[in-house]
Length: 405
Image (cartoon, rainbow, N blue to C red; front, side):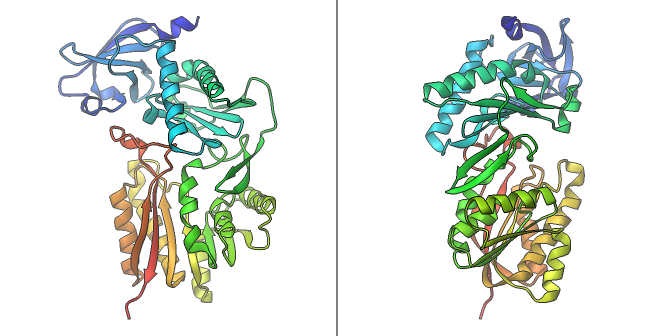
């Protein structure tokens, strides 16, 4: 029964001096912070969390298979029910209605919307859900029911729902990787429009949930510097930055990606927008291509670097720094004097300060001076919760490469 999902079935007691992240507003309790667990229950159920002295800290769902043993759902109330869940969904959607274009956007962003472990993206009239934690997986159907109900109150109908819970991290939760329809089947090739640019989104086999919505306004931010420019878009994926540059009036655009599938999709998107004459796409390894362009004496007015995360753990940060430094150094050498570099990192572990230092070191080693035009993060439908460091992951700079006379 649905009511059983909201029954509190145990108590988690913290060690003395632990729970520091939780006490500053964080959403997670780690296994090494726990003194004892009371109750006879299965993983995934709701539990109370108490400090070492019995002080009530809130309610969350537990999974003893995970290092993140408890993910918090509420810090104030001593109960959590279906109405509480619907309120969280309603708050998340009303926030998007106030702050962003909701034709395609992220409706729920995990911890930043106080629903840890779940993402719900909207692509026109299609929803894509990604569930990454056992406890939230049990509440998934109630969350989707609430999403459709609240959208309906705004006059927005949902044609279908597809689940993309196929990330490896689910294995750490004791969950199988899964993708498939929730409800009736539909055409999984969905056309969306963003910044006046049209795209086909492949919710079945595309990266993550099908499209990177978090760069929406960063893509728009390059329009001024792209106008009349010769542009190189590295790690183009399905061509989103490249097509924004072309739409803005670039003279020519070359988008490159190591994936043949992504390049084929980018070409299809260029044709969809009538931009195939301006935006060309080729399959290359960027780390090989940039040195070859330098050797050939190529120069560009604007280079865009939107690589995948080079690090997904603290252990590999040092290696990631080398990767970010290398591509930024080589790109700077290929930018004409007075030209521009748009560069970003989508790794949480690459902190804003470390990313800035890495770009600065690349500039020094390339013997270039950079002038910051703009610094941005992820779009507002991916809100940054200051109490949850994990919610800040995207760093995006627009820089001018300048020379003194």
